Length: 127
Image (cartoon, rainbow, N blue to C red):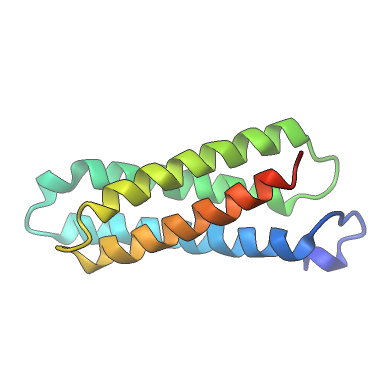
């Protein structure tokens, strides 16, 4: 889809990878939060649930901004990508701390790490 856009510029393959990683991370975080709510020890998972939901929202917003190619505000996109890197790092760290106990947290941490990596890579191309 991105390559078919008449205003497409730059590395559309990297952009497509970022959008895919953002979608996967948003979905993983949403599902992890829901799975945490189903755990017996839900009270101990409050921070995990919160970081999951925050990360899912940030990833979804970042995905939408990156999907728009017309009249892009590079400063805004850069700031959003930076926020996404922080959200993914925070959520990945939190989920990783529960990964041995909860498979959903392990899966979510992996999605967060992958998303953090590709967003960081995209940021480096926006010099």
